[in-house]
Image (cartoon, rainbow, N blue to C red; front, side, top):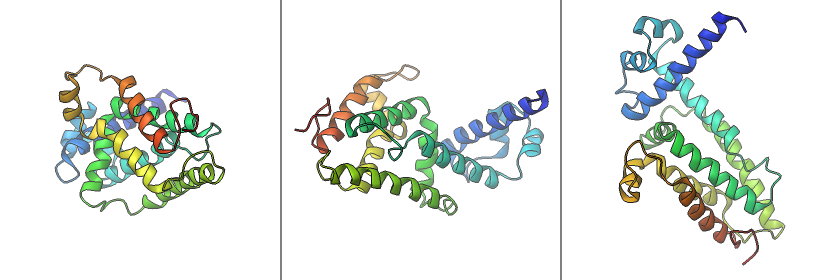
Length: 209
């Protein structure tokens, strides 16, 4: 890759990260291109060289998040046993929520206003969720876990794991973790894993209970 391409890629990444931060904080309507440029460390004129509009940038970021989440958070391709798959899934979700809370908040803000920009993104999301539904149903059919509603099981895992990003201030206040200090990820992962494993009729070691 040439130096020019490396620089262009770095600027595009800086713009995307800045857009996630600003849209997560202020939403689409409340975010200006000036704010995104400032957050990315470039001029407004430079920003408009790389993007066509704020609205198109929002769509690009939304598509990136959905695609990135599909790669990071998959139960469908797992070769692990159910207990390992569920525990590892929860770990990835919580670690991502703690390390990149603005990503979850961006998506939560879009959902809170009814998902008006999600038109082109529902299809890939539904496909990913259905693949995971099939995996969970396969575990049930094989007698490896207790019967659960595969879709609601997933939604409930999202609710628990993403809480630590979407309600970060509340979690920090109640857990006594000051801004800038890491929250106790292992404590959170252990409790969430036990919660969902037991819903599946499994203990923390994966044995049936």
